[in-house]
Image 1: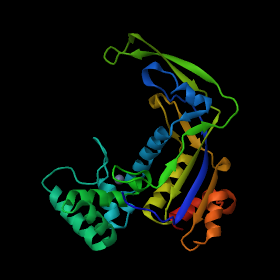
Image 2: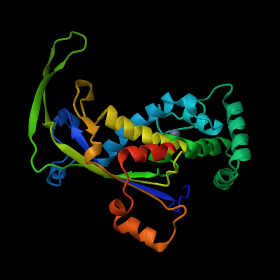
Image 3: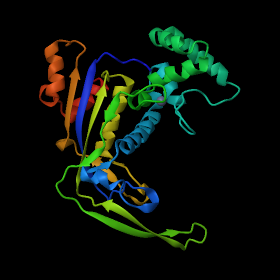
Image 4: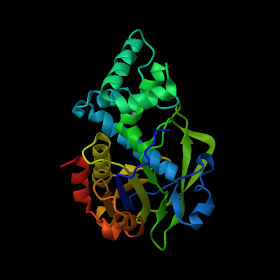
Length: 293
Ligand SMILES: [Zn+2]
């Protein structure tokens, strides 16, 4: 809904992840890997699962840095971003002061983000709550990257594929435990099909219009750093340690094209035909650039 039709920058990455513990992306109870057909193409983590995991980490990183946001409206967006029940919102939960807070944010949007406000006003007219919700959504670093119900995010990604020629599939067996008696429950022997660690998973991402130094660009840098330094988990049975991955930056490839002052045909052609040779960037440089240093 919010138009982002001019390409200002483009970040591309061929990410490689090391699988550190068995991975199960399954159909829950039946325990088999999600659709065996996916394995023919070696796609083992659907884009939606990967995106969900990355989004949760980004949300946590964003909230943990609340005090560092200097722009008042961005700070409000970070503070109010919530998705406890149902869709993501950026308005205060119903309370005595909720309408007062909405009025304050509405006026601030009107005064300091004129272009955005005018656009929202054309869409929603008198609906102050909606204007505040979507307006803060646009300014919210996580929603800017990952999207929210009113608009698409700046990032697109593929599912993750196994990069190796061979990999091992096996079953992990277990029994369900009755929470009250803390003994094995009858009739709940289960098996989960897993991919053994040691393989490399790869996926590709594209993020458009991250402006170095902006809050969403900084958050994206924090996210990449976190994936490299701390790793993350995807798939089922995370509580027992399945699906641990870390980002292997030495074997990943990154490209960043800044087209703000370079809008000639050659530059665009290079971006679409040979992005990684024409706009290569090392991981550490990319992080610095996104952070605006
Ligand atoms: Zn948000």
